[in-house]
Length: 193
Figure 1 (cartoon, rainbow, N blue to C red):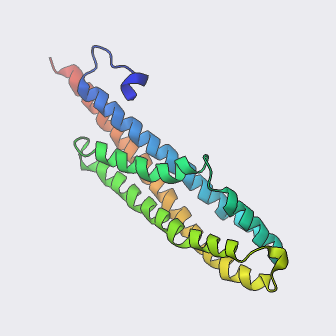
Figure 2: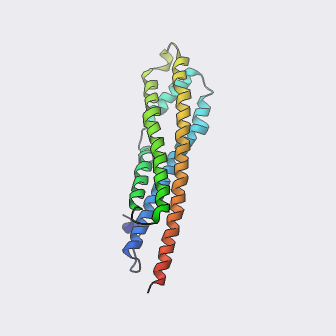
Figure 3: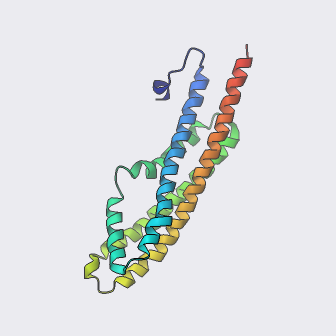
């Protein structure tokens, strides 16, 4: 795919093309991670902060609608893509670039796998419980429904926000190190007769 976007010139070697592919995979992973970290961050600093100020029925109704619509074609590429692209970047970097790049990619993968696991194992089940509570207007005790949901959801959402943000930092560090390796290998190639 990278060769279709940027066909190697006659001076480019197969190794250079492979190095570029690794760079594109790593940059794509960082982009997807940035999108999902930003998504989680928006919940942490605005969505849940704003909803904390509304009454119980409005909170429940709002979260039910948010949860019903969040699974869409805009969300899926970053949520699933961050994990898949980070794994791909890690696999592509196995044969090259030394351990420095690989360590940062593995750290990013572990951190985002944690955030992904929290989402699927805690936040999504809480969302399903909230949906099962039914119409907020018909609830006899909306405060109890909210109390069973809000604090736990916010706590674990904050943890996944921190984990995915640190994962983004790890991928950015890996990208810098990859760039250094790429530049060094290109420079050394010009010195070799």
